[in-house]
Length: 139
Image (cartoon, rainbow, N blue to C red; front, side, top):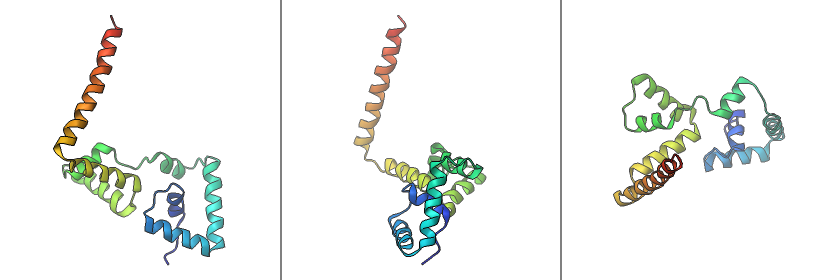
């Protein structure tokens, strides 16, 4: 069984691992007093609001590309440097948040046209009503 890292334990606590990885972490936790101790330390760090640069970056996902960049990555229209970074972030770092975002974008692209049209219509109607209310409020 591969060694479980602190990063994996953080991801485990945030429920950001795949089912397979979660099962591996849980098995390792059952088998290792030392790993359970490390997990307790991480929980204490998280609960007291650790303020290291690494903790702040992880908490606010500062290294994550924006959703529109993920969409442009999917459409293959990013500049080479940004494309390479997003690919590294998704495939090497394995950011579960960005992978989920990209999966959502891909699912939306596969959405059948009638559903897509209905969704756009609902958004338009809700926005139209909101803008209309704002216009009436200025009178």
